[in-house]
Image: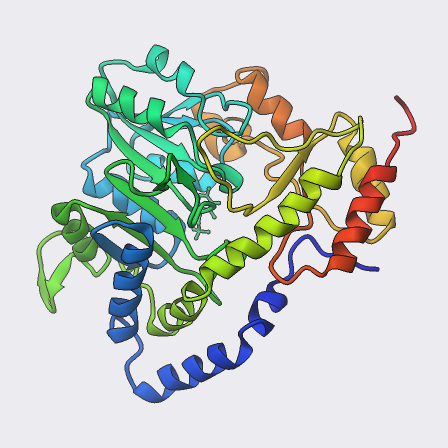
Length: 368
Ligand SMILES: *Cc1c(COP(=O)(O)O)cnc(C)c1O
């Protein structure tokens, strides 16, 4: 049996007729950018997340860039961010001219709240919490520290659509929540897309102006903005997916529950759950000291896996200018050497799950 790490086609066929009807409707409407589908999606997504405003943009990276820009964070400012994140989180900070200050992750892969205070300086302006793999960060501690030091709080929710901490949705804890709708994300479009959510009208207005050449009214430009709009086709298709998000989340939770219950092997570790947090299982990430052997073993059985992420941002070529050496963030670097995402996607069959579970449980490294 051949099993891919992700199957985007399954997420399409589950609701094929609804997606196709919506696509035809948008094509026939004669209106393709910033129209009624975007407006409706923004309202429905804000309502789902429980925030007052949502502004659609072209990608998750743009959501991050425009969020920091709207908050006035740039040159000379420092932003605390976990070192083990996807590099786009860091680019959202540095494209604005601000400096990322890396913090090690905790055992659930979120920013380690107990290490934040020691990193605060006179230049610290914000914290970027990344709910990596779909599990919420330690939001009670993070919000407490942000209040204490008067720091802005931005959440990178590109992997956490619908996950909660203390019964509250990720994206609503701080000033702005940033989402990506890249096709492989939990709420995925059929192309690129993103959004910010916020309860503060002035921030929503600022992003709405920035995404459209700095103008609210056509040809009256208030600031130098960008072209970063969610299009009508993606917004319409996202509305279809959003209407099913609870069942999509339940589907992944059933798979994850099986993995957690049935996977058992001393040669890898299962994910740890954070008390008070929920997980939407954007990725199911295990950790092994024998990762390379495990990948090759699974590959022979035609089970695909992905490493999220092999090179932490501080060691990437893009950020060589920050001057970090190997060893600067030991926990992050160990995770980068050991994490492995196993197949997890909506529409994964019981037989596919059986096959993955059996294979993983039978793994034994050759050189122990
Ligand atoms: C995917 C992702 C992004 C970037 O989103 P795009 O839509 O691909 O630009 C940012 N942060 C994290 C954590 C992501 O997983």
